[in-house]
Image (cartoon, rainbow, N blue to C red):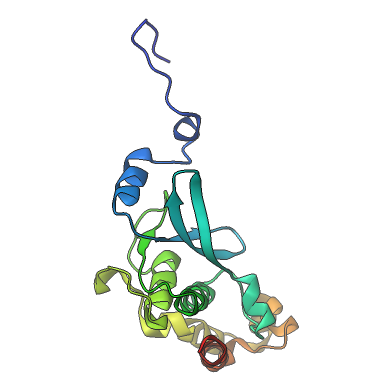
Length: 193
């Protein structure tokens, strides 16, 4: 740690690695709502946040647990769940009269095709206007979970039961994940309109 009379201690959230104040200031200066994408170990969270002088104000929120209430039997932490959570958040935002936002990924690395950008694609497909480049978005096959279904088909029955026990316990065969994804997306579309 530096010593001397000119040393300035950084803000606590900067020291803890939780906030990049330079990037946050740029987002605030845009004077637009932000769609905040947060990925935890077990869930996906999407929020539309507006900056007010008193602090951040959450306008819309969608959580991957809400997908379970709509009948989602898959994981709440994969790319499909990220897309559906973004789609749900986008539909809620449009119902509240919010038609545009700027993506805020926090301290996540902007790696092409990740869950953060699957969430973005879901929000954009719902009709929300979010500036982005199509290069970063994941493939449609990956979003629908076709890679999981193909992997499950390449395994023996015992391996499928072992590796996809949570899916099977919920009553979903991993081979049926793309069709189940489409059902839930249609359900969100109907409820959102």
